[in-house]
Length: 115
Length: 110
Image (cartoon, rainbow over all chains, first blue to last red; front, side, top):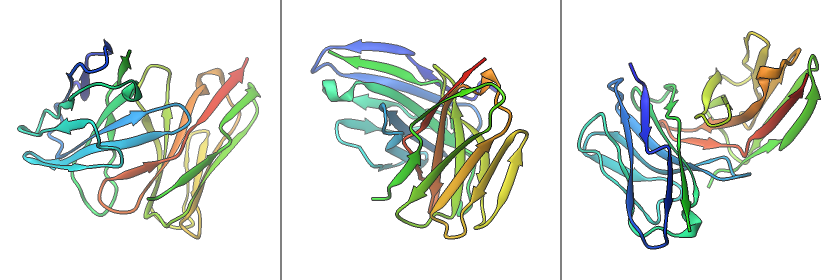
């Protein structure tokens, strides 16, 4: 298994540009999520999905869209990039959404700079 | 929303020393987790704690789930250079949504 993969690894955008960060997992996990990591702030949840066709907002959803048309893929779209969206983005997945914890596996991250 | 305070923010230690870091929360969690992030990589789970008072070890790492369910600590004994990285605590109160601490940057001098 490749686990959780993310592309691209690095990206530079100009303010106002749009782009899609790709995330895929080959573990047949139901739960997938996107986080952003900023210095001194830990990881903050952007959007998450409990299964194909179902998405919901996390802690910091503004400026981002997601969709989950398949179990494997969970792309994150930046509609109109802003400098405040400069960050490292991590995708994660776990087997199911149960009352007890299921380990979340993180991808390697996408480092995004918005000029 | 839920807040997690993690301390210290950074630590500089000599190889062989023991390390301790902790997290406190304004609300109760059902699960406490500790992750390590190596430079340029995503976080990797080190230890998961499921019950108040639970003390769990993983090699040189020991973590405890506080009795009030609002805190947790992580100890690393006899540190080695490959322990370098950012350590995150995370709490889970329902489903799979996690709340992360701010991270502790650990530097180990050989």
